[in-house]
Length: 449
Ligand SMILES: Cc1cc2nc3c(=O)[nH]c(=O)nc-3n(C[C@H](O)[C@H](O)[C@H](O)COP(=O)(O)OP(=O)(O)OC[C@H]3O[C@@H](n4cnc5c(N)ncnc54)[C@H](O)[C@@H]3O)c2cc1C
Image (tube, rainbow, N blue to C red; front, side, top):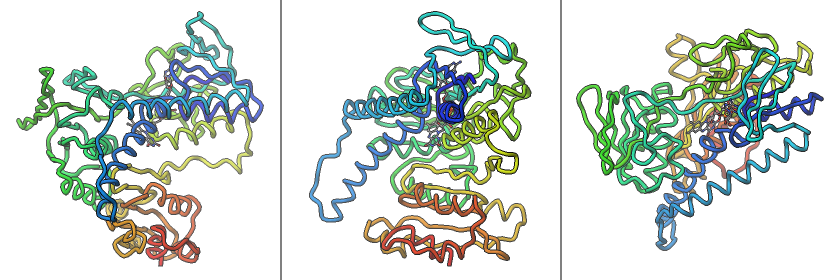
């Protein structure tokens, strides 16, 4: 098996396939761990953790602690991100080495449907493969109207941390990435304006959940420019000017683009191998095979749910399928509708399965129970009563169909509902579980009641 791309999809595929007995070569042009470790999940959450620590220290003065300095030191922050990156990379490297996965540090290209060339610093190496896995991920989308200079006009990849802390950051795009960067920089002390192309931030989310985040942003002084689509960015080296399609203009010290992603599929040799693509993504069947049956695609390149967690599961499923590791009856296709996801703002937002608004739009009969954290003893101990737990269930059977959580540790708490949704558990199953007291998770039991 030859895998191109060493992100979560490629790595999990490599280790599973090697464990199942395959000879595996992993071709990676950059760092093992992929964009997930270098640019996306890890550094963004580490920056958010720094901002959250700062807000926490500021809040703790209300809990009886004396005043401490909360200035952000960009050098310290940069060092921490590098340390994290190196530590995680070396963990994955050792895991791959322990499974005898051969690593080729170079750019991978398919020469035909069975040959992958790795162009390395020491020259080209050609590998013959029975199975090829394409796991090359994606990168931030940049449109023609935005000239990114990495100093004043940034993509997410220029922000870990940026050369200087923005005095006033204009974030363009109000999806998951956009709102996380709003939270990240606001909590580190920047003034932030968010350009929202629709009337709701997080347009794909449950309106009640989005409203809770908007309310919090407004309370923190974030400026929301709604119904405005950015069409141009001026940059004189001191100031940026973002122009919108309705004539409105917003000025800041920096601008950050968070308008989506583009697949890494150029020069991958898709044509030479006869692999079909759509808009640069590689469409796959239920077993993650492309139109060429021994060439699979996983992770962001597959155009399915772009999450690191999903990419890892896809990689594992490919290895099991390609190596015939599971009998047909034991194979479980990935149900993307049941994947949990989270937004690491404060309060955190997490959801899984069917959303109340979607059930309503489909005219589906559901039972919705909602419990605010304000009534939780732990939330009061934490001095943070924001948010709620919402469970969507089938009124006839009690089976949990979905849920949303807004509040502290929502990304951890949603796991309870994710296990329930994936395994057909009922609200009674949750209610009858003895959870720890005092914890925020008790609100889930209460909602299940
Ligand atoms: C700002 C941001 C934050 C995010 N936060 C989260 C989060 O908190 N949780 C979550 O689940 N998801 C998060 N995501 C999404 C997540 O990062 C992606 O879904 C995930 O990285 C996809 O994994 P992958 O294996 O497909 O690709 P990647 O992680 O992108 O890895 C692909 C690898 O392929 C390599 N490559 C590309 N082309 C070639 C080639 N021709 N030859 C050799 N190597 C090649 C690249 O160098 C890269 O290392 C975030 C995304 C962004 C943008």
